[in-house]
Length: 366
Ligand code: IPM
Ligand code: MG
Image (tube, rainbow, N blue to C red; front, side):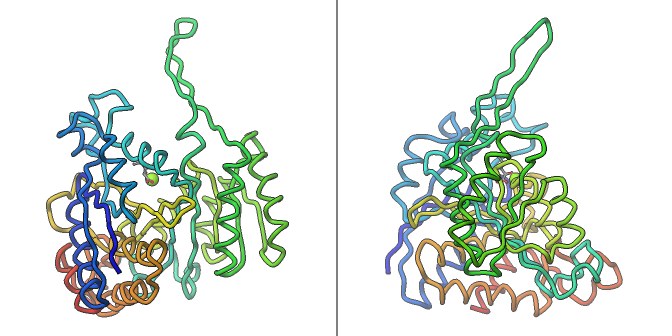
């Protein structure tokens, strides 16, 4: 089959990690007789440098014209980069929020599972890890605090800022339905995370999620307050299957879950709308501190490409091949620096490799 893939390399480590995912996709294309055609799309800081804005109309049109988009990461060092002298709506992050909204990518899937091989990189105790955990964070991505009205003004002589956390019932319902559908194919449990003891938006969230749950009698629904959820993820991550939550809570909890799973460099993500289209990107950021050093972990991006094969192209066998190759490379003892064992005495049991070498090793195993 022929597929058109938009490629946003982005900033920081973005170009390095995307190059490895493209390497993997090219290998899949050759092996399974597909043809992937790539269209380069500028977004984020690199687009500011060329176009004076983080996301152009042309970039949105190119993304829309693709079957799926593979993305690296965007943004730079807020202290040193000139991008952060610009007003907030002109900064790199505004490009990412803009493309999420323009493409209606309301579902953000962030799987966090612990590979047995990475137990040594996991900061949790062995008795907590047990035989591993496997949670799917489903983060609402086009509403909430990220897209509510915001302003900063002087009131009574004091600078005052306001951000609005806003959801309507339809926005809650459509992500809740996706969460229950996802749980139906997994371990049949949805934990809906909110702050219903304080926030109106959370009370509506809870009510709508309960309505949706009525259509899924064989799925267990539990509600959890977000502060407790943050604690439970480190206390007993094995209790979770699907975690359904609003935009900001999902942003925070997914970083936490990824660290518990070993490293942000392992966590893939898919942002989907109600068609087959998706934007696939690692959950981690652009890590400007290690950009250009060839040490970034490309696995999250490679696993994001596997999610693209599975969700947007229905190529399950190919996606399995990529995921198995990642597992094998870990079994064979190869690690990027971020997933090296924390305990010094265990460091010599594995071999540290750079970004491109990790990509090559995964390709060899497909
Ligand atoms: C993420 C990132 C973004 C977000 C930033 C870069 C705007 O942290 O994808 O999790 O907050 O959504
Ligand atoms: Mg984040």
